[in-house]
Image (cartoon, rainbow, N blue to C red; front, top):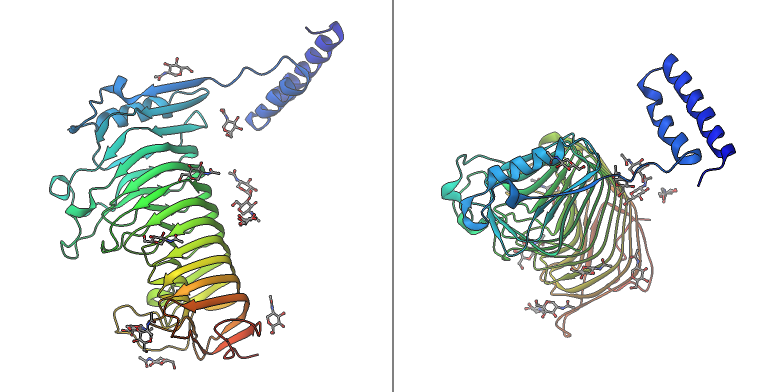
Length: 420
Ligand SMILES: *[C@@H]1O[C@H](CO)[C@@H](O)[C@H](O)[C@H]1NC(C)=O
Ligand SMILES: *[C@@H]1O[C@H](CO)[C@@H](O)[C@H](O)[C@H]1NC(C)=O
Ligand SMILES: *[C@@H]1O[C@H](CO)[C@@H](O)[C@H](O)[C@H]1NC(C)=O
Ligand SMILES: *[C@@H]1O[C@H](CO)[C@@H](O)[C@H](O)[C@H]1NC(C)=O
Ligand SMILES: *[C@@H]1O[C@H](CO)[C@@H](O)[C@H](O)[C@H]1NC(C)=O
Ligand SMILES: *[C@@H]1O[C@H](CO)[C@@H](O)[C@H](O)[C@H]1NC(C)=O
Ligand SMILES: *[C@@H]1O[C@H](CO)[C@@H](O)[C@H](O)[C@H]1NC(C)=O
Ligand SMILES: *[C@@H]1O[C@H](CO)[C@@H](O)[C@H](O)[C@H]1NC(C)=O
Ligand SMILES: *[C@@H]1O[C@H](CO)[C@@H](O)[C@H](O)[C@H]1NC(C)=O
Ligand SMILES: *[C@@H]1O[C@H](CO)[C@@H](O)[C@H](O)[C@H]1NC(C)=O
Ligand SMILES: *[C@@H]1O[C@H](CO)[C@@H](O)[C@H](O)[C@H]1NC(C)=O
């Protein structure tokens, strides 16, 4: 019910808005809706549309190529023009999908890909291009959700790529140039290379995912972040053959929380500064994580000869279970053993370790800070660190090189090698 007064206010405001619009342009269009919201009848609820890929010709038998059904459903949903759209890949079906791009910008603003069944990649022999860098690619979409309700499966058929020499291998899911992204409740298995990569994107939330590949599979990182901002990764289990999470250059404001990692190579920042590159990483928090049976724990790795910085990095409440090398800063990163030392390097500073507990299989130093002569690490702080050996007869150790900072006296192992 609207009172006469309410109505006249409404028309008065509408009139003002129309007058204003007649003298200005599109920039003021939103104020029309604000006027409705505040003074007039409620704005119509955004339309909710669900598009089932089966209605776009998908077969879902795991053998038929369903790529064009996904393409058509995406085109219909992305160009629909009103409300918010869900594209659904229903449960009980297995969809064979070849490399595909889900491109934006989309109109409507919010678009959801709901995966309740399974999406599988073709085996390597059936890929038309042997140099494709990705399988499922999302580009330039704002307001995107990819959800699996804990049941949706994304299977990269990686075994057909592993052990096949140095051919470039694709990343299973890539989000590039996207904003306001939520990836939730997916199970991802056996990517040929990285499972999930976020590049040049912002405001990304990844949660309740489960990523699995064999411990022996090559470069099967769980999640990689490149040049992205405002990223939250939480409540996920990652068990792969390489880094559970890797944070690369150009990445700012990342929170990683409640992650169970392992087997795998741990949670890494870097590598940074490869081939003289200028890299920046800043404002990273890793908390409430368990690293179980990982080769490394929490690691910052930079190459000699690069430049830039990695700073304002906080690791807290980390539990190690038989991690080989729990805490590492390595400014001499050189996996291929053919590097020379340089006078430039990526500056590492303001790194805190608080509440790091558990066990190390300590085949190497438990805590290792190896920093450049010319670009030392500064402002390293350790508090509440208590890491013991899995073998009660062995002690844990810390080593430092050109590392400045402070450690609490009670830290175990004793870290008395930091320069004050
Ligand atoms: C677009 O959305 C409307 C509802 O908002 C729906 O009725 C229509 O079928 C959709 N069009 C396409 C092409 O999917
Ligand atoms: C898009 O999603 C956001 C957050 O979920 C919501 O606030 C907004 O109303 C949605 N917009 C449309 C057009 O559905
Ligand atoms: C992204 O998040 C930041 C910080 O929460 C916020 O200020 C900004 O408006 C968001 N951007 C978009 C496109 O939603
Ligand atoms: C965390 O993830 C699990 C599945 O891995 C899910 O069952 C649970 O609801 C999630 N918790 C929250 C708070 O989202
Ligand atoms: C950092 O990202 C979080 C989301 O993880 C967001 O809530 C927060 O506002 C961002 N901080 C800044 C300074 O943008
Ligand atoms: C970390 O876990 C503790 C104990 O479960 C909880 O109290 C705290 O809120 C968590 N912190 C974050 C940032 O998730
Ligand atoms: C660590 O992993 C082993 C082997 O997968 C498992 O048996 C054990 O329960 C895990 N421990 C913790 C604390 O997660
Ligand atoms: C580089 O410097 C480090 C630290 O001084 C040293 O351990 C390493 O052997 C040097 N590497 C080369 C290739 O000279
Ligand atoms: C304990 O120390 C012994 C002797 O150095 C070594 O052989 C063994 O591998 C160590 N075990 C663990 C779990 O670190
Ligand atoms: C770690 O230990 C392994 C095996 O014990 C050894 O081959 C390797 O050189 C060590 N790495 C470092 C950085 O100490
Ligand atoms: C870094 O350490 C120096 C010397 O220890 C100190 O003066 C400075 O305030 C610290 N900076 C930060 C950001 O913690």
